[in-house]
Image: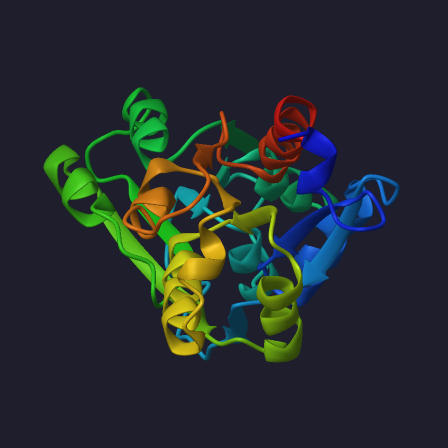
Length: 250
């Protein structure tokens, strides 16, 4: 089979973008429009959540594990507080928002633990603005060191297919294509929508691209033309993977 047959009629690679709308638009603008035809169908919706927080509380570290946490945690932070971010996207946004004393961790929660373990002290106070849906073992990790860890649930993500007509059009009109999944919640929503519309068979000639093994595990049992994991869990690495597959497979 010639590679060109895997493209659309206008000789472009079809790609489904499932992140929240603004993030998907950002990814689509980073793709060469001469090579890709983007289908933007967000599968999760980020919602701001009311939370309780007092600036009188003394803490030494703030952890931001996502850009959404920065957008939804509306508090002024003392310049002496050390801010730890995971991923270049979160780090760059923190800088844009005027945050100082930043430490960036390239990787995931396990890399965060390794990094923080080197400078944490007994009785250190840590806050973590995050999603109400976020699951991790940081509570036990910090407790074992003798630190106080307080997650602050400032937003949540709803599983929601906000553009079902685009989602359906991608699977009905495109035999081949790429599907991008940036989070576990998005992968769960994707799996639900595939089952809902009966599109399991429509996935077999498409490739799924994910940011981590944990995300890939959510769709591991699906019959596809390949499951690919980016080298790093960030947008830049996903874009690199997209172009790598374009060169090898199309």
